[in-house]
Length: 364
Ligand code: AMP
Image 1 (cartoon, rainbow, N blue to C red):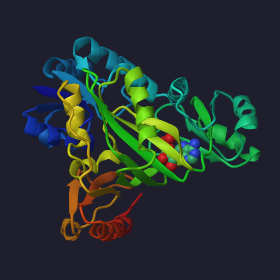
Image 2: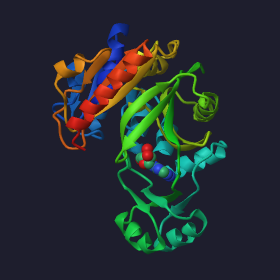
Image 3: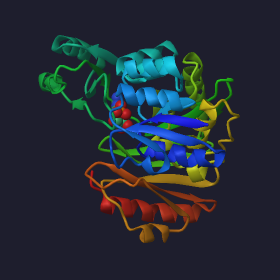
């Protein structure tokens, strides 16, 4: 059985690592000659929309999935008409467009920050009468890790903020004064089985995820599960999904969802009975999904733009290192490390040391 993946970065790499014990093979398309998953798969080097590579992928793979959501609609369409593609194309279409995504949340009674579509400066001026300051203007498409976003503090900044979108369709959102950011990762298979991971509590800096910690038994777990179940069922979704949420004094507002395995779920490799990567593979092959129960305390720290010595990291108690085989470059995620421990004091101590090391080598 062969799994095709659009994208051959670290997510594809970790999917392949999870698929080997199940006897699976992998084929990926990635333009980078040194793609992170290349060593673990048949690598088709070239553009994601190269027709000859897509036709080879569709012919060789039993099922195709992807590691990023900005897959062009015509590529998803082509692949879907030649082979099985999961998650489904409608989930991609919604997740690619912040306006459709927010409308979809509203339709499912999932709370969001107040928002409005912005196609002109007049739209923005009008919307700000309701939304109030501060607010965030975001491009509707192609945004990730806080890119294509600008905070607006006052009416004087409206014109400059609008210009910074450079004509791209946008939405404006009220700035949420959240207590914390959390995400829920869940998986659904074609038979309709759904599993939910414990909430992950996420810390960002500069729009980039830095730390994600498993929060087993969180009081907002039930609420988050209801939200993500609504999404999974409405989309007839197959695969792993990540829903990012703001905790505003105990109520949840949805920010966005990712139709793929997600950085805030990397701790599940060591910290849950079955990792998000294995469950994604099980889901797209319509296999029974594995238990998502947490194994003690677990949290993950990203290495951005710089790496620490392997020896230094492995010297920390209960630390597990995942190198992505990427050359460090400013702002680039090159590795993550997870602390997993049954002992809370050991966990806390190791996490403090790990975070300090990650900050020291950070180049974001
Ligand atoms: P996004 O690209 O939408 O995931 O945004 C990146 C990060 O910006 C989020 O993880 C939040 O930390 C912050 N952010 C995005 N939207 C809002 C908002 N409406 N209010 C406050 N912070 C936000």
